[in-house]
Image (cartoon, rainbow, N blue to C red; front, side, top):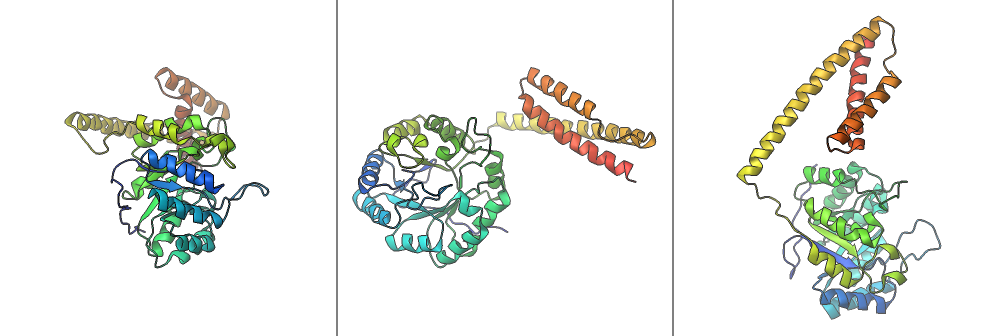
Length: 355
């Protein structure tokens, strides 16, 4: 299905990269909301974010101030002229936000993973023209992400965008949520005119990772950033470690290098031709390798040998990983490539043995 989209144009905001949405993880007190908003507005920020309802992993944590916080967002609009935005997870949230004049809504990762919840929100938004951003689901499922966008689009909303906030994983060594950049890149390939924002706060989980993640998102051509900023991050009631002060945010944004997206010079065209030639050669070499794999499959069939020879497979992975490292490539990347090649070799040998 092709999404019917319209640009997210907001009066007073230039149509250029990056579009920036900033504010605290949670609206905690009126003083905290207003202080943060005024500091961000003084830095030139135009769109304010604050969580009104906060889905927590376990009960007992701060789950948001609730409807009372919407009055504070109204005050932010009145005093600073900023647009205001928040997350919605139910039809009731939608109705309360529309009643309070919230300008932009987003759907969180946990909600995106639940088609019933997304449909409930879509039904509540029918007949409303408001920008809606959809965060990726907690698990790396592109179809689920696109499905949520389709449900909102089917309700008649055309000013849509996506937010990449990374994917949950047991591996928390560096990132809170693994970026898996190839997934939003594939989303861009499938829906080229869909704006995609990056949420470096949730990907990194640590404030020192916000700046490099912002730059990486810009280098990958993302349209904007949604960043958690708090007037006193260390005292935040939720996600303290990943929030930055408005001063630090301003510093990060001023250091960003925004590269051109579409400029294609003669030199670049020549280099791309070389890439095409390399790719063609790779495919030819892979085809040759598969022919040899099929011959091996025939030999194994004639001599009643099992297809999977574990020792040989381990030897290939280790050797190729080391060779790749010597050639300046990541050994894990090379291993993944050869795992995929081996999987296809096994599939072709299975066809021969089962004839």
